[in-house]
Image 1 (tube, rainbow, N blue to C red):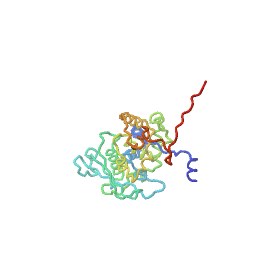
Image 2: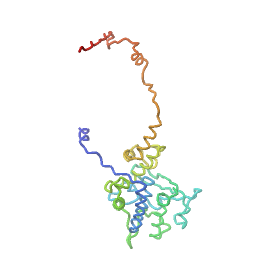
Image 3: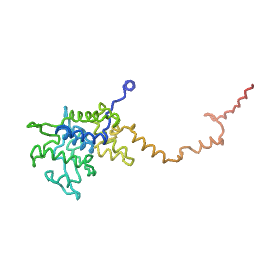
Image 4: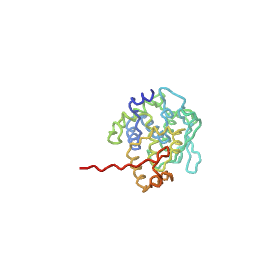
Length: 289
Protein backbone atom coordinates (compact mmCIF):
# COMPACT_ATOMS: atom_id res chain seq x y z
CA UNK A 1 0.00 0.00 0.00
CA UNK A 2 2.83 2.38 0.90
CA UNK A 3 4.59 1.63 -2.38
CA UNK A 4 1.37 2.43 -4.16
CA UNK A 5 1.20 5.80 -2.46
CA UNK A 6 4.83 6.49 -3.39
CA UNK A 7 4.05 5.89 -7.05
CA UNK A 8 1.45 8.64 -6.92
CA UNK A 9 3.71 11.09 -5.06
CA UNK A 10 5.31 13.87 -7.10
CA UNK A 11 9.12 13.77 -7.40
CA UNK A 12 10.94 15.37 -4.43
CA UNK A 13 11.95 19.01 -4.84
CA UNK A 14 15.54 18.97 -3.68
CA UNK A 15 17.42 22.19 -3.12
CA UNK A 16 20.01 23.01 -5.78
CA UNK A 17 23.67 23.04 -4.80
CA UNK A 18 25.50 26.34 -4.55
CA UNK A 19 28.40 26.73 -6.97
CA UNK A 20 31.76 28.49 -6.51
CA UNK A 21 30.66 31.12 -9.05
CA UNK A 22 27.55 31.81 -6.99
CA UNK A 23 29.62 32.17 -3.82
CA UNK A 24 32.01 34.61 -5.48
CA UNK A 25 29.13 36.79 -6.64
CA UNK A 26 27.46 36.53 -3.24
CA UNK A 27 30.51 37.90 -1.40
CA UNK A 28 30.81 40.80 -3.84
CA UNK A 29 27.09 41.51 -3.54
CA UNK A 30 27.28 41.52 0.27
CA UNK A 31 29.95 44.24 0.20
CA UNK A 32 27.30 46.72 -0.96
CA UNK A 33 24.99 45.83 1.94
CA UNK A 34 25.08 46.32 5.71
CA UNK A 35 27.47 44.62 8.11
CA UNK A 36 25.20 41.63 8.78
CA UNK A 37 25.33 40.69 5.08
CA UNK A 38 29.13 40.75 4.99
CA UNK A 39 29.25 38.57 8.10
CA UNK A 40 26.68 36.20 6.64
CA UNK A 41 28.59 35.89 3.38
CA UNK A 42 31.79 34.92 5.21
CA UNK A 43 29.86 32.38 7.30
CA UNK A 44 28.34 30.84 4.16
CA UNK A 45 31.72 30.48 2.43
CA UNK A 46 33.34 29.16 5.60
CA UNK A 47 30.49 26.72 6.13
CA UNK A 48 30.65 25.59 2.51
CA UNK A 49 34.22 24.29 2.83
CA UNK A 50 33.25 22.21 5.86
CA UNK A 51 29.91 21.02 4.40
CA UNK A 52 28.17 22.51 7.41
CA UNK A 53 24.55 22.27 8.39
CA UNK A 54 23.10 25.75 8.68
CA UNK A 55 22.31 25.17 12.36
CA UNK A 56 26.04 24.78 13.01
CA UNK A 57 26.95 28.36 12.17
CA UNK A 58 23.76 30.38 12.72
CA UNK A 59 20.61 30.42 14.80
CA UNK A 60 17.44 28.59 13.71
CA UNK A 61 13.79 28.86 14.64
CA UNK A 62 13.78 25.40 16.20
CA UNK A 63 17.17 24.66 17.76
CA UNK A 64 17.95 20.97 17.88
CA UNK A 65 20.74 18.88 19.30
CA UNK A 66 23.44 20.50 17.17
CA UNK A 67 25.44 23.15 19.00
CA UNK A 68 26.34 26.40 17.27
CA UNK A 69 30.01 27.09 16.76
CA UNK A 70 31.68 29.51 19.12
CA UNK A 71 35.00 31.33 18.87
CA UNK A 72 36.58 28.64 21.03
CA UNK A 73 35.73 25.96 18.45
CA UNK A 74 38.04 27.52 15.85
CA UNK A 75 41.82 27.04 15.89
CA UNK A 76 44.37 28.52 13.49
CA UNK A 77 47.89 27.20 12.81
CA UNK A 78 50.80 28.58 10.83
CA UNK A 79 52.82 26.88 8.08
CA UNK A 80 54.82 24.86 10.62
CA UNK A 81 51.64 23.79 12.42
CA UNK A 82 52.16 26.10 15.41
CA UNK A 83 49.08 27.64 17.03
CA UNK A 84 48.25 31.22 16.08
CA UNK A 85 46.21 33.19 18.59
CA UNK A 86 42.95 34.63 17.32
CA UNK A 87 43.89 38.03 18.71
CA UNK A 88 47.17 38.15 16.80
CA UNK A 89 47.10 41.30 14.61
CA UNK A 90 48.85 39.34 11.83
CA UNK A 91 46.41 36.43 12.00
CA UNK A 92 45.41 36.73 8.34
CA UNK A 93 49.01 36.43 7.12
CA UNK A 94 50.22 33.86 9.65
CA UNK A 95 47.29 31.42 9.54
CA UNK A 96 47.86 28.58 7.08
CA UNK A 97 45.42 26.03 8.53
CA UNK A 98 42.04 26.25 10.23
CA UNK A 99 40.57 23.50 12.40
CA UNK A 100 36.96 23.47 13.54
CA UNK A 101 35.65 21.37 16.41
CA UNK A 102 32.02 20.25 16.16
CA UNK A 103 31.20 19.79 19.84
CA UNK A 104 27.79 18.16 19.41
CA UNK A 105 26.13 17.15 16.17
CA UNK A 106 22.92 15.81 14.74
CA UNK A 107 24.57 12.42 14.13
CA UNK A 108 25.42 12.07 17.82
CA UNK A 109 29.20 12.30 17.44
CA UNK A 110 30.84 14.79 19.80
CA UNK A 111 34.09 16.75 19.58
CA UNK A 112 34.70 15.88 15.93
CA UNK A 113 37.34 18.00 14.19
CA UNK A 114 37.98 18.88 10.57
CA UNK A 115 40.81 20.96 9.07
CA UNK A 116 41.50 22.89 5.89
CA UNK A 117 44.49 24.64 4.37
CA UNK A 118 44.68 27.97 2.53
CA UNK A 119 43.60 27.73 -1.09
CA UNK A 120 45.61 30.68 -2.40
CA UNK A 121 42.43 32.62 -3.22
CA UNK A 122 41.12 35.67 -1.46
CA UNK A 123 37.42 34.81 -1.33
CA UNK A 124 37.12 31.06 -1.85
CA UNK A 125 39.42 30.18 1.04
CA UNK A 126 38.26 28.52 4.27
CA UNK A 127 41.14 29.98 6.31
CA UNK A 128 40.61 33.59 5.22
CA UNK A 129 36.82 33.31 5.54
CA UNK A 130 37.04 32.14 9.15
CA UNK A 131 39.73 34.72 9.94
CA UNK A 132 37.34 37.45 8.81
CA UNK A 133 34.51 35.94 10.88
CA UNK A 134 36.62 35.69 14.04
CA UNK A 135 38.18 39.14 13.70
CA UNK A 136 34.81 40.77 13.03
CA UNK A 137 33.22 39.20 16.10
CA UNK A 138 36.13 40.04 18.39
CA UNK A 139 36.31 43.63 17.14
CA UNK A 140 32.59 44.21 17.70
CA UNK A 141 32.53 42.67 21.17
CA UNK A 142 35.94 44.01 22.23
CA UNK A 143 36.94 40.74 23.82
CA UNK A 144 40.19 38.77 24.01
CA UNK A 145 39.36 36.16 26.63
CA UNK A 146 35.74 35.18 26.02
CA UNK A 147 35.66 32.20 23.63
CA UNK A 148 32.00 31.34 24.25
CA UNK A 149 30.63 33.96 21.84
CA UNK A 150 28.81 32.34 18.86
CA UNK A 151 30.45 32.90 15.49
CA UNK A 152 27.12 34.22 14.17
CA UNK A 153 26.94 37.04 16.73
CA UNK A 154 27.07 40.66 15.59
CA UNK A 155 26.07 44.07 16.84
CA UNK A 156 23.48 46.33 15.29
CA UNK A 157 23.97 49.62 17.09
CA UNK A 158 23.93 48.70 20.77
CA UNK A 159 21.85 45.56 20.26
CA UNK A 160 23.42 42.11 20.13
CA UNK A 161 22.01 39.88 17.41
CA UNK A 162 22.77 36.55 15.76
CA UNK A 163 22.70 35.70 12.07
CA UNK A 164 19.63 33.54 11.47
CA UNK A 165 18.91 30.83 8.91
CA UNK A 166 16.32 33.21 7.44
CA UNK A 167 19.02 35.80 6.74
CA UNK A 168 21.24 33.14 5.18
CA UNK A 169 18.44 32.08 2.84
CA UNK A 170 17.55 35.70 2.07
CA UNK A 171 21.12 36.56 1.06
CA UNK A 172 21.49 33.42 -1.07
CA UNK A 173 18.28 34.02 -2.99
CA UNK A 174 18.67 37.77 -3.38
CA UNK A 175 22.18 37.38 -4.76
CA UNK A 176 21.06 34.63 -7.15
CA UNK A 177 18.17 36.75 -8.41
CA UNK A 178 20.35 39.85 -8.77
CA UNK A 179 22.90 37.98 -10.90
CA UNK A 180 20.32 36.25 -13.12
CA UNK A 181 21.09 32.88 -11.57
CA UNK A 182 18.93 30.88 -13.97
CA UNK A 183 21.19 31.81 -16.90
CA UNK A 184 24.44 32.36 -14.99
CA UNK A 185 24.44 29.27 -12.72
CA UNK A 186 21.50 27.25 -14.04
CA UNK A 187 19.70 27.82 -10.72
CA UNK A 188 16.50 29.69 -9.95
CA UNK A 189 16.53 31.66 -6.71
CA UNK A 190 13.50 29.68 -5.50
CA UNK A 191 15.49 26.44 -5.89
CA UNK A 192 18.05 27.52 -3.30
CA UNK A 193 17.75 26.65 0.39
CA UNK A 194 19.92 26.47 3.46
CA UNK A 195 20.84 22.88 2.55
CA UNK A 196 22.26 24.15 -0.73
CA UNK A 197 25.50 24.99 1.11
CA UNK A 198 26.02 21.41 2.32
CA UNK A 199 24.91 20.08 -1.04
CA UNK A 200 27.39 22.33 -2.85
CA UNK A 201 30.27 20.93 -0.81
CA UNK A 202 29.33 17.35 -1.70
CA UNK A 203 28.94 18.24 -5.37
CA UNK A 204 32.25 20.11 -5.52
CA UNK A 205 34.07 16.96 -4.41
CA UNK A 206 31.89 14.48 -6.29
CA UNK A 207 32.63 15.92 -9.74
CA UNK A 208 36.37 15.53 -9.13
CA UNK A 209 37.21 12.23 -10.79
CA UNK A 210 39.56 10.86 -8.14
CA UNK A 211 37.46 11.68 -5.07
CA UNK A 212 36.19 8.69 -3.11
CA UNK A 213 32.89 8.39 -1.27
CA UNK A 214 34.82 8.07 1.98
CA UNK A 215 36.43 11.48 1.47
CA UNK A 216 33.04 13.14 0.97
CA UNK A 217 31.64 11.34 4.02
CA UNK A 218 34.59 12.45 6.15
CA UNK A 219 34.31 16.08 5.07
CA UNK A 220 30.59 16.33 5.73
CA UNK A 221 30.70 14.02 8.75
CA UNK A 222 28.17 11.67 7.18
CA UNK A 223 27.99 8.26 8.84
CA UNK A 224 26.39 6.60 5.82
CA UNK A 225 25.87 7.13 2.10
CA UNK A 226 23.09 9.59 2.91
CA UNK A 227 25.23 12.23 1.21
CA UNK A 228 24.15 10.74 -2.13
CA UNK A 229 20.86 12.61 -1.70
CA UNK A 230 22.87 15.81 -2.13
CA UNK A 231 24.48 14.72 -5.40
CA UNK A 232 22.90 16.03 -8.60
CA UNK A 233 23.89 13.67 -11.44
CA UNK A 234 22.31 15.88 -14.11
CA UNK A 235 25.00 18.58 -13.95
CA UNK A 236 27.06 19.03 -17.10
CA UNK A 237 30.39 18.71 -15.29
CA UNK A 238 29.43 15.24 -14.08
CA UNK A 239 28.28 14.15 -17.53
CA UNK A 240 31.53 15.23 -19.16
CA UNK A 241 33.62 13.35 -16.63
CA UNK A 242 31.57 10.17 -16.99
CA UNK A 243 31.82 10.21 -20.78
CA UNK A 244 35.60 10.63 -20.64
CA UNK A 245 35.94 7.67 -18.29
CA UNK A 246 33.58 5.47 -20.34
CA UNK A 247 35.46 6.23 -23.57
CA UNK A 248 38.69 4.78 -22.15
CA UNK A 249 37.24 1.25 -22.10
CA UNK A 250 37.84 -0.76 -25.28
CA UNK A 251 36.46 -4.23 -24.52
CA UNK A 252 34.72 -6.42 -21.96
CA UNK A 253 35.60 -10.04 -21.19
CA UNK A 254 32.50 -12.01 -20.25
CA UNK A 255 33.59 -14.85 -17.93
CA UNK A 256 30.12 -15.65 -16.69
CA UNK A 257 29.26 -18.51 -19.12
CA UNK A 258 29.61 -22.07 -17.85
CA UNK A 259 31.20 -24.95 -19.78
CA UNK A 260 27.79 -26.57 -20.25
CA UNK A 261 26.32 -23.37 -21.72
CA UNK A 262 29.20 -23.21 -24.19
CA UNK A 263 28.68 -26.82 -25.27
CA UNK A 264 24.96 -26.24 -25.73
CA UNK A 265 25.63 -23.25 -27.93
CA UNK A 266 28.12 -25.20 -30.05
CA UNK A 267 25.62 -28.05 -30.55
CA UNK A 268 27.62 -30.82 -28.85
CA UNK A 269 24.86 -31.60 -26.35
CA UNK A 270 21.66 -33.32 -27.49
CA UNK A 271 18.49 -31.31 -27.73
CA UNK A 272 16.66 -32.68 -24.69
CA UNK A 273 13.73 -31.68 -22.52
CA UNK A 274 13.77 -31.36 -18.73
CA UNK A 275 12.69 -35.04 -18.49
CA UNK A 276 15.72 -36.17 -20.45
CA UNK A 277 13.77 -37.14 -23.56
CA UNK A 278 15.14 -36.06 -26.89
CA UNK A 279 13.13 -33.28 -28.45
CA UNK A 280 12.57 -33.76 -32.15
CA UNK A 281 13.56 -30.93 -34.42
CA UNK A 282 11.09 -29.52 -36.88
CA UNK A 283 11.74 -27.94 -40.22
CA UNK A 284 9.09 -25.55 -41.36
CA UNK A 285 8.09 -25.99 -45.00
CA UNK A 286 8.93 -23.21 -47.35
CA UNK A 287 5.97 -21.12 -48.33
CA UNK A 288 4.83 -21.42 -51.92
CA UNK A 289 4.03 -18.50 -54.05
